[in-house]
Image 1 (spheres, rainbow, N blue to C red):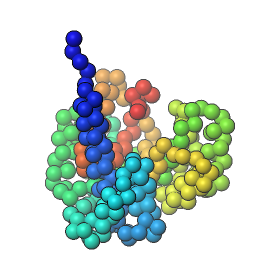
Image 2: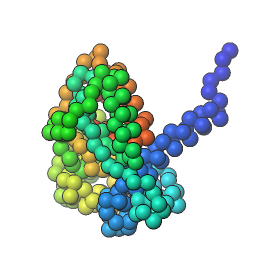
Image 3: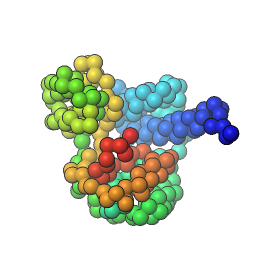
Length: 244
């Protein structure tokens, strides 16, 4: 009788996944530092990146090294922030955010992933008009009316633009400029977000034909696996069972 994966094998797989997450977070911290100042207290974008890294259990020493790299104090590579726009299966609109020290490699990797799944790279502005840049904070409220009301009251008092309740989640939306204020107000209200950040949110979602869904999910997984890719936004309406 065959045996399942060994404990060591599972641990190695988990370590590899953790390392990939850390690679993305370190690049995000590096770029955020380069775009502002090396002090999280005076750089909201860096503070958000550091908070995300701490939530992923990254050590403070690793975070400090990433900040030094971004400030140039540690002789870091020249990291750049790039955005690619394109189409996936069934014409799904995609915005692919990247942090890279080698744009030639990155665009080749992104183009290959798209082509392998029936998509293609578009020109700048080809799909961006289908998205709105906004602050987004997601809370697991489980459809509980009292929990939803608590999020709603705290968010609106903090100046959020809207709160949506769907799939057992309360989604707080605000302007990018107001994101830090809203986030801090919700933290002060003892509300812990599952996800928080400034994102490209689709204006409308489109249904994906069943025959194209698996290919789209494979593409999203493939893009996420690329070290240089930090975030992928899309306008596909995925069935709840396909959403992590």
